[in-house]
Length: 253
Image (cartoon, rainbow, N blue to C red; front, side):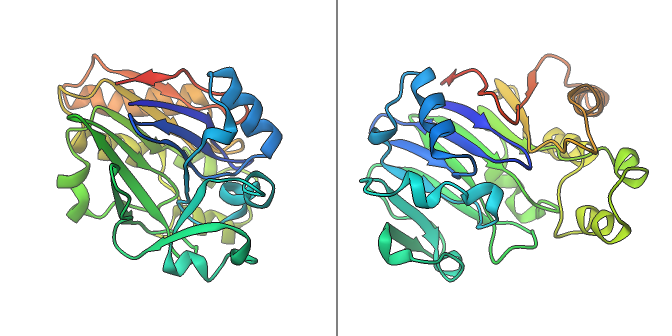
């Protein structure tokens, strides 16, 4: 498998995953032009995308739906609840599901998370004993998922804000409360705590995603997460931050 985060943050989110059979995007939260050009930069023709999975229907995860999927062979893969929030659904090739998508030759599991959207999903994609865990836009991770999320090769996990920066930052009080709530976003602190429970010696790479531009910095996110992991005896791990407008490196499993 291959995976590359093309962009992550409040201005848009999109991640590319390639298995032996399929080319996949998780979310279409940038412009078609941005996604097309940055797929080409990693050697992928956007017309070869087979499936687009949505985590949820907020605009920073769906803004290119109309333009990217226009006259495109790719299937939009969404839950039945998400389908209620997408206008002009008849214009797309659509696969809907409730628990897990049923796509032949693709091992992908879907998990309900906690966010103020109609429905929010995270994913685990596996092939040939390798696995990618993708978690974003959630106020917390339910402990019932720990077993399924544990011992993966690669993690993409939300590390949205530093709690102190958020509390003393420019957001109005109602928005601060929303971000900090169970239907908000994971802080650096909780990203670190959850990772300390999930990663094992098998884990090769962690990418912190969906960093707030107003309530976080890469340095702060990395320092906090690495500090918590170090406290749990985890010191030798490749951890990086996603960029809002620049693709990360292609990770090959």
